[in-house]
Length: 498
Image 1 (tube, rainbow, N blue to C red):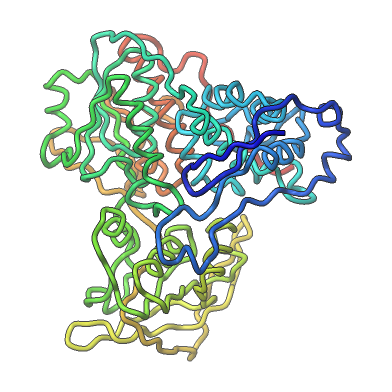
Image 2 (image 1 turned 30 degrees about the vertical axis):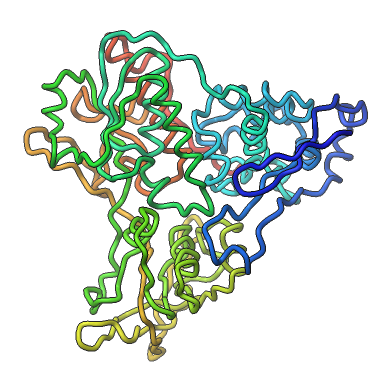
């Protein structure tokens, strides 16, 4: 067996040169596959990684990828596909991977996923594809995300072509507002059907929340840049620092000859705690903080930083604060560890890096002196009644207030959609201030305007945003061609446990 070494994103990998699969692997019995333990990726040591933004998790090498792929049972009714928002052909690409047909496996994945390099790294697989894997019922699910990432990394290491052929232009053009995963997917599918699009991005960098909301140690920036290079290669135009609603209106886009508009602006407005003292210096909200750091601003909030929240954004904020010089960072979360919505991998990394979490506690007031935060008043919580999903409501414990000294507090409790200012066109919004669209076509109340991603769903995953961008592209193509938008399409059905 021969080995080659290749430097890929996130570190040095040993890649095994392709060999034919053994007959033993091909004819494994289910019991033998069930006996294979889940393979674990190598990672940077905590003491190394907290000083930089290098990618923390390394990809599998070939031997590990094959071993993990052999754990897949190739179910006749694959639940993993149902759990994937994009409905990737997961069993198929895993089968091809374990047969060492890596390039074929990559293109099988690309049949449904326009951004596999992104999704394989940032999707919360444990709540999506891996959360639905039948192996997870009595053990560890197949590491689907790591296998998908292996295929991407293998293509890069072997200098394979990763660009799909572009279609000849058909004359009509589409405006896309926002360059996040929904906008990227929409532009990708339009371009490959011959429809030119221009992406308008209000920020100085493209990628939307992928760039400004996710730290580089989880999603290296060269991956995002490569996705946009592929779009530009197919004729997509990308304009930064243009805010639709301020620099240009939706009506102006229509007047300039854009036959349709897709809105994929994400949810970039940090939700406030709504407590006294939130306007003091030293208070910075989660997404605002990540945006500033990810765009290159040098921010050091002091040694003692308190983060509020239990989701991935809160964990990203805490781990970013560590990497920017705050060595005493901890999190306040009003429920228990069991209820934290963040991925288990991120919680594990957080704990490895020395960030403490104060469970069953919440801030009630921010105290300050001379306009600057000095202390945070908190209260103990207990779990009260649970809803139908089993999530229990936190209830304050009387007379349990306590104080925490801090240099800064960063609430990271959720995000809202910042809407496009457009007095000429009235688009229907939901009571959560998201865009109301047809659940199949992504068409808004204005027939030539479509929307998707967080702007419709609220804060969600990259895969869900990409799926809606893809569905919107299909609808826009039909709209431009005068075809029925709904023919042959059915609404997504949420599966429930039986």
